[in-house]
Image 1 (cartoon, rainbow, N blue to C red):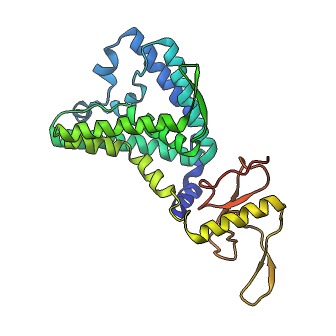
Image 2 (cartoon, helix red, strand yellow; image 1 turned 45 degrees about the vertical axis):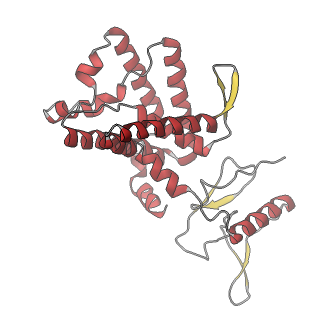
Length: 287
């Protein structure tokens, strides 16, 4: 987390705000091109590593407009859906971190196809499929209880769709392994690398420890009682006033001068969290 903070402080000003708006325009462009000439993307724009190495360098960018929908209605719904979840991730993480997540997914996708090409000698197009999977899975991890209308009728929580996606991806991996296409399986894992890194680095495996359970109980007790103030006692028994205090773990700037704190805009009230818990805490909602 501190490494990301350093990157954000140094390069954050270069972040593209509302990135998903531009991505959605590319998706719409791909749909229009496909309606005009269905073969044009595959022949001139797809990320074909062999042709890329031959000098068609534009393919490393133009593969982003891969046609994903053949029907106008589904294109409108799908593009809006990707725009919605991408914007939600940007609101939760900030523009820089979302840029880093999305762009690292693109680079890993290219790396996956390059590895496959170098081993097999021909290209295995992955397109935008796994980039969108990674974005959707990250959204489902952050907002598992968000409901959508499946087939415009059935309300379903987003986490259940994520489970289905995970099962589908696992089936693809198993089929690739059983058929001897080991490097296709490696390519799929590489293409989803940004989500795997995010998932395993953001999981709080200490949440079931006695100390963490105790802190959660204290936190809930403070919320109910409306306790305020950041009074702490130092090692000499003297009471000091701190400017920052994490609402989950209780750490302050006195515990570590390198700690950074942020307020959560999704909690009802002014609750402040250290960077270790800013994206993993349970949002406080007033009854």
